[in-house]
Length: 337
Image 1 (cartoon, rainbow, N blue to C red):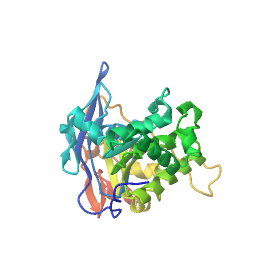
Image 2 (cartoon, rainbow, N blue to C red; image 1 turned 135 degrees about the horizontal axis):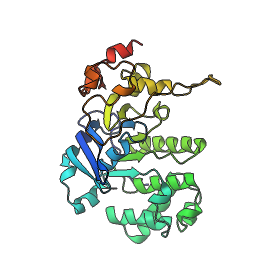
Image 3 (cartoon, rainbow, N blue to C red; image 1 turned 90 degrees about the horizontal axis):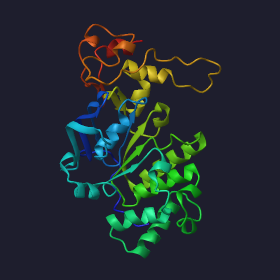
Image 4 (cartoon, helix red, strand yellow; image 1 turned 90 degrees about the vertical axis):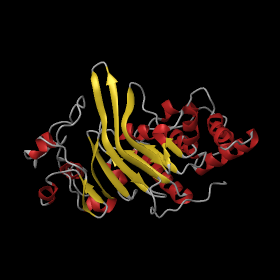
């Protein structure tokens, strides 16, 4: 399979993708939902970053914002999204068509709603190849066979003419990955790609994407609610809560020395090998309703370390060690627990 020259996997140099102070809101009949509130991160060549958080934390909306795909009534209302030297927020619709798929690919959560049920798999893959790489019909079909083989679909030449319902859930997810990789993007966004799959298939999909990253040199932005899933899989982790990044660190340091009380609570709630019949500690309370911009630390009502400043001001994301940032007034006290 011919690909672009492999990108550097060192994760060094200037950021490939840079997000700064991103604000995305949904204007509904019930009021304004402040889904993303000042999110920022960077992604370099060959690097992998996970956005982790529970449902409603804003991680998927962040991913959709990067590609200009926020559904109505949502809209991006502030911040900067840059890919290399391009301001993605300033792109016109035709320019977006060149970026989506070609420069930044995306694997969505649910393959049954992402794949067109009335078009063959071959048609859906070759459409990407013919649009972005200007391939002829026969060349695109040959490449589609190679892509299906690359993602582990057996008998790819025969199955190219089948429809999505003729594949298993794990195979449909592999097909989505093939489509996302068809135009050889430099960045891949994987939005909860294993959510609807059983544990065995989840592991296969994770290993597949990791292997493809090593082979093709892509940068990957993982979106997941499963903190355990990212261990050994990514370089860095950004933990999201209530539309904000509350902690960002290299993956090893995050597991070894989490600073934010929310991150610590998430790690304590994870099952570990050897524990049996032990009740896992739950985080008390519930996430905030995001119908107003945050006026204080959003985790304060659920936090055992919250003080007066936590209930009256929003903490900034400050550096506590090399590559490790945390948005907490009392991270030192929490870290001593």
